Image (tube, rainbow, N blue to C red; front, side, top):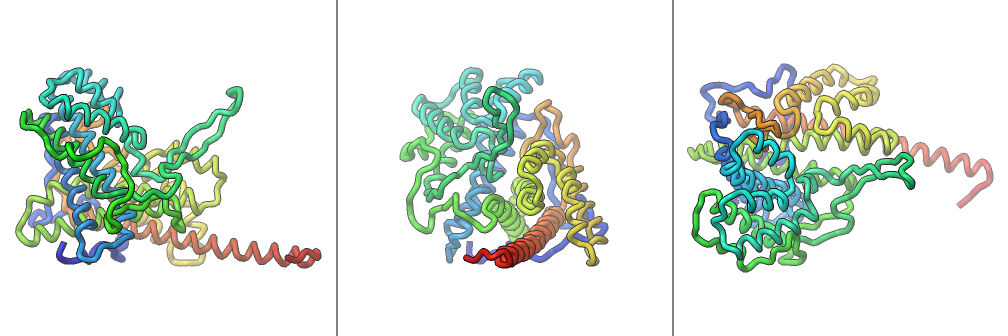
Length: 432
């Protein structure tokens, strides 16, 4: 890109009475989400949209005039999700071309869930194959390797998995966290992105019944992650940040969403209105996931609750924005005593409830239908992408501010406790 987007970091905050769905019918920033008439076609369009979002963000960080190593390390997480998701919905679009009955589609989606290797295996058995044996072999190996890292499409959305570990002899158990990256890894981002694009080239040709050979995969190994590469094209993950678990994820999802919003506005202002409709849903999903991550950051890293309690609540609430907020609200009220902030808390709560009503299960912006085959948009729906983008960004900004305030107060408390402990030890005659 020729110029750095000015809107990546802003200070906009929630406003009383603001509505996420508000729009001016004369605004040039209106987008239309169309009610599906053919789920196979709609799934394919979603795959195109998420592919384009991933490609645009990847180009931004790889070909910037002044490469930002920090963006390479964090944006990788959002890019990986966007590319991976375009493959998933692209494969499902192929499946839906041949699996037509509602009951069969529901079974197909429920049985394979997000596992690319399993989805691929089913469509090989049920769908007309128009790809060469070599392409199929490459895809099969690639998806098998990818699924070892990201079987459930959450390895690049969340910093760890919460797992229930049974005690010996099956007498009870406890929660443990399983991190995706347990050590620092220098990922070759160019190869990483090229393999996603090569896989998508095959899937796209398959869906379109284009019999021309794909070519991008031929020079690439069917290995999900390769390390090394050019210094300014490496993504380093597993780095120990100050808030080591959630911080890289919230930063990645918020800033990539901000970038897409800026990109859409720039293109629309210049008279190119094609991008706003294609990038709208990926932008919304990135923002929505950041809200969820921000709430979980505060709960998991700053509340001081017992570890097992933290894990259980996160499992119980899953993707519920309203549920997570209501769990945090008493802590926020406690921390805000003696300030004017309690009046503002109702505004934050209203924002969280609005997001929950719009997308209760974190699926509305990434799939056209639920697992039951009930479509999310049963009627055409208009949005103002600037309004909804600013709404999400403002909520994420204020949640980040709450997290920072909690962190500061907790640090002060820890220092006071350490000083008190040192004084008590000294009074009892213990010296270092």
